[in-house]
Length: 383
Length: 138
Picture 1 (tube, each protein chain N blue to C red):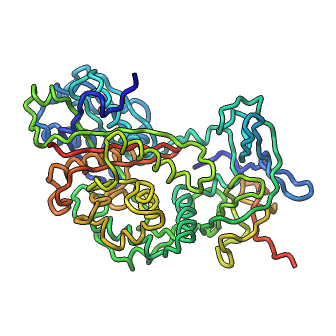
Picture 2: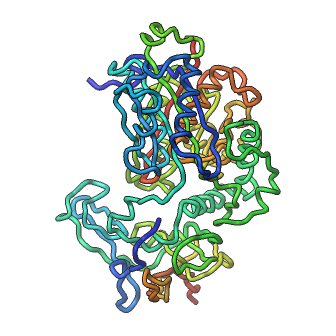
Picture 3: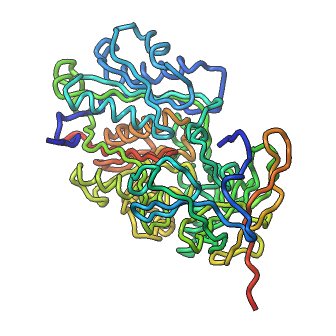
């Protein structure tokens, strides 16, 4: 009989760590990754030898990234593997770690996301399928096209779309791990430079380097290792899907998110109203509006109005991108999805300081990746 | 996404008007572009069920964006990319003959034209299929 994560053994995030997301530097990826892992181990107050499997989310480093990094924690002989799922690599690493614990294969597993910018070979370019505009459409133009279509359909303005960047940079300014830590005004966002369509530079996420780590564990491990149960955050849904051919739908990106999130709600037995915070794939401002609507946080075409109302601010009904999101915290690719889980766990513990969403109980992490794929996790505060 | 060459030679034909070389699935009726012979994305039918289908180079503009920053060999900015819902079904993306979005609006009728395009990997000029706003019929 099939089972969802929720129906398997309970899984908890018990340790979180980050290396700040930043512009490309001379720092080796090993240092970035070990910084995040050691912070997560300290946070959980456990030793590396308690960890029984490791998944490294990375899209840019190349073959065999895990052991050349993790061996320096003490080579314990555990299972290690790389997870590449484009922008959802870190999210998929979290999912694999959760599945190890939920299935009973392990009691403690770790997901690490780590990347540095560099040349990358894109498999879609090797399919031998050419397209008319293939050389001309990079991600920011893909989303500029969706932005124009959205603004036309709902009579939304460029200012309303740009307001997402103002909110997320305000949050990022209070996040010591964020790549962009500076609040910006709407005028600064709109001032350009204009990149593609309505999207200006500050409406496009920075892609730098960094690392994120999340340690997940079973009830047995929490008991045996003496982990503080009050700080353990339960993972109540994990869903991973890929794009279908959506007959009649104009926006496949939104449809993929809509059906992935719907499955996650069903698994977690919650509705969108139950969410206190969401970290979503806001690589470009327009995405926050599209996905917030697809998640049911507001009605179709009401995203811009919701942002303007403050409902998505910290302190609002559901804080979106309290970390600063991809727009301000940054999008170093491999770490990003794991970093979302770190932020949500921190928030649900009530340890997010000035970024704290009051009384946060349930949070959702959402990433999409080129291909296209979508991975969603829902986390719940300890009872 | 880098590509080795700019060749569009298998994507369209001119006889005498530009037609897009699309595909059709005999099993489920799915019409697609660009052409491929791997299998039907909609129903999973094998290549034997797929056949070429010429798609008329006309349709309606459903979105557009003027690109001011782009890294690609032989590609000059600004240029404008459009999404065109072809009269024959598929929504496609193409570079427009308009450098900027001036005078364009969603809902405009568009038609395919062949123009000199970006240089290929060896620096040789190539032809490209682009879309232009269709003049209103009188």
